[in-house]
Image (cartoon, rainbow, N blue to C red):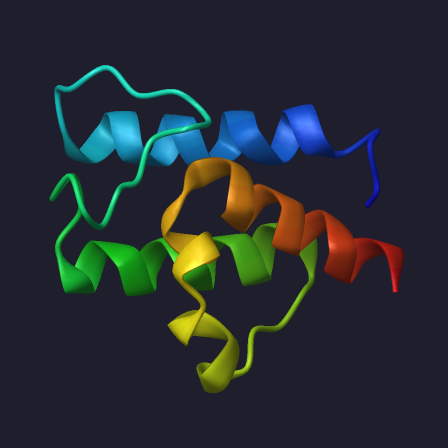
Length: 83
């Protein structure tokens, strides 16, 4: 994992979620199960991360339940940055 980028990636995800809901979230938050983002907002989040960090998610990767957690999604972005 690219540990240098991890805090920035988490902050980027948390900022995005904060723009779409008024609930306090942290890196352990499950933004899908908690209903914080609708499906359009989730896709927009993924597209924003791909653009911001120059990474690409395959559709099959998005089925991973770990990506529903802020920390899981952030780690996945960092792993992509490292490879």
